[in-house]
Length: 250
Image (cartoon, rainbow, N blue to C red):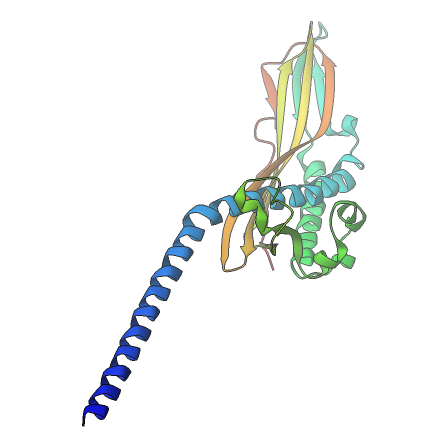
């Protein structure tokens, strides 16, 4: 009888010990994941956001250069009327022309980002520029950058060590684009007209066990014109150039 009681007590102790170990493991995992979420993930996400913005800016700038800047004729954009004294009476902006180019550039940006998301790097128009700065093999897996986990120690000695963390992006919102202008006095009796293309995209940054949306807004100059005369009291279409062009993701 004593042997049976000893065996039962031994089994009970083992079960209690296992239960205590399981509780300690669960608590430890909870604390570890809490630390990662509160301390490590914000830094990781901030770094990933910078990489995503830098990557997307390459595509945006290339699209604007190819479909707007390289095609646009600055003289055809503006209709300037002078009075009898040679002063600028009015400045009008050719919105139909610029929106034609803007539509094409916006579609190109959307397609390129979706191709990158799916790993179809060979379909991206600007792959030569991307491959100068990024790894082709990684891009074919939909990864724009691999970050060494050693960066979490905030020490350059460990920055190049540790497991590689893949950073992916996914276009989640609409691609919104519009044109804005600035008209200011420049020097003595001159007016400077600046035209910008504004692109706004919403991306989802995807990390292992974590993802979050960011908005990227880029303002790229596309035309610059210096005209003789002061800024006029009337300038048509220069403040409200055109409504935003929105292309939904597909």
